[in-house]
Image 1 (tube, helix red, strand yellow):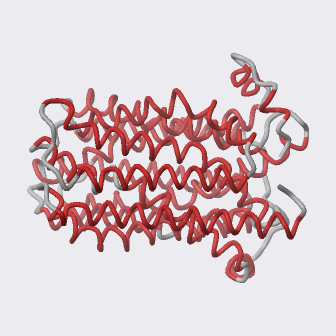
Image 2 (image 1 turned 30 degrees about the horizontal axis):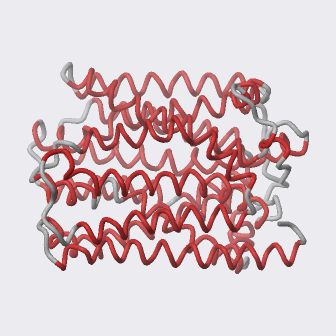
Length: 425
């Protein structure tokens, strides 16, 4: 990994390096932003629309949201395999077209079953275009690194920055539109993805992740790579940790404040933190040996959960100080992920031997989705006791700390093994 690119960084250097990227890479990054704008424009308001407008029960809301998650995360391996077989461009275009259809169906939904069809299509679309976009960034990032302009890890850091910007702007725009009507919000989202379809049709060149590989052969290659499987299982705790913003953080706010009204501000804080620090921390991570950036990143996440486990036992302090444990946890978790995730995504290409990148990134995200599903079912039972200060309230946070710390140890050992085998630091 050429560290001279990072060490010569000056103020404004990140912007200059972004401007130096090819048009295709820049468009892919802007696409990641607009993907999240269109997605978060609608999805955060699904539960409210279902309960208030369609009269859906809590169980039905949970079923629909669960199906959306499964149709996306659970099928990433399919989108990755198709990317290796047919190339990035056709899979991206197909996924975007399906998402447009999903939003149009959701816009006209007058029943939960009708809406469920649209939501499943919205999720499945991401299972196609997300692995394709990630594989394209890995391939083009490798080329920019070889050309000596920008490292692949920094391309992934840019990707996180743009994606998070979209995740911040989407709910804000959705909140402005939702009073006009949920159907209008869906129409706007469909319009955004229609423009993305045209942009990709006209501007994105053909990007291949290697020679065309049949689906079963590509999947078999991934599943026989034991080192990658260990890496993917250890890395999957990143998505488990990230998902706690939606699963466990509301529980902590209930314990600390007696309500969840501050949840929106927690999301804003997390997004602003990433927008400010992702690029400089990404450069910092590139100066470090890979095992150190991964180990430190997951260790910081573990430390955040451990501090919250200790705080959960005691009555909260008065006023805004009651938010201190949650803010500290979010800060350490995101700092850790900003250090580790771009380096980890770059490492996937190395473990894959720069071949079948679609399948590798697809399985990486599928493993993460399955880990989130399993951990959510398990932690959900423990979180009921975490709404009030008591010894049992520490248990879910302690377990989250334990799995992140375990991942840190596994990833450090794995990087050392791969480094010894390849002669790379």
